[in-house]
Image (cartoon, rainbow, N blue to C red; front, side):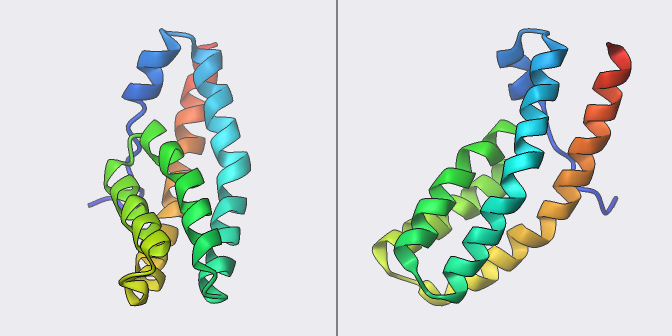
Length: 121
């Protein structure tokens, strides 16, 4: 198994309708914004600020769906639900570590996909 998380850009390609520049723009936005969201989420979890945890998890969730990371989107949904309901709070830090650990691999895969798409322009 490769240590890079395999992103699936088929949904993004579908909505882009073959517009490579649009796909590149969306990848750029993801790479620009998501690391900051993960930092904010980690800080909120450390502070046990469950309202902010739920809000940020909610913000990250669709971006994971966008890049085909459905398994991570489901984990983020669970984290959001638990934070908002203030239940199973002990599972949130571990879920965050799992998702955050994969984030670097996602960024690498997206940068590679972006380079391949740029070569087509």
